[in-house]
Length: 268
Image (cartoon, rainbow, N blue to C red; front, side, top):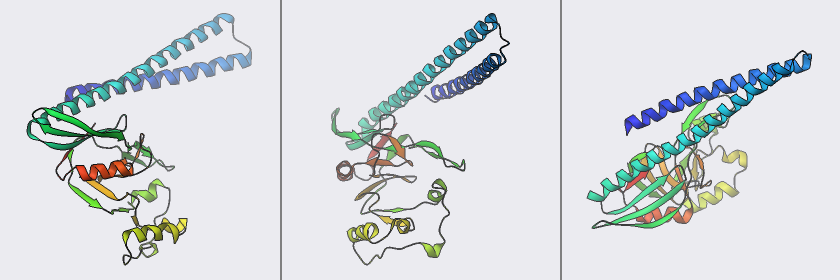
């Protein structure tokens, strides 16, 4: 499996290099053609020759695009096959609820192994997963990919808080506030009241200064470790998150109540 993935990565690099060369060559030929036309110094044979070369490069470009699409599909099939193998291995020694996360189609599948070879689908729907490599206006780059592989539910919690990370300010091209500029919502009121306070008692500019945000993750969180949570969020059905897995409210509650600590979560 590792050798196949290595071969895929090498093939992707070759395809990307070829695609770049064809694009640069096509641009150079197009510029030369325009110059010849402007100077009115070209012959019909030269024009036909250049046009033919451009058509050839366009066809090569199309070929590489098709190969890139095929490569993505091949990677998806490899990851899907690996997830199937992991599920089959689980069925030998695990009975209970487990979760599959498809980061290509952005769907989740809650399943339950009830033993004796019986495995049933309990719930399925759309989720949001990591948006991969991204950058800001200053060309700072982060990898917000949802990590694939076999994971386990490490912790669960109700009424979670979202803690604004350090990279938030860089991604938003903002200067981080000084420590004494942060706004702290009173913890003497209930979690629900803190949400109301955040939305109704603070202005938009003040809300940005809240480092410990109530309600942003929904009513529940499922911790897979490494900073990856399953929580409430928008953009389901797309690659939009910073690595976490976003769910709708009802789906999140169903997962929270079904998956125990230690339950397997397979991401592919």
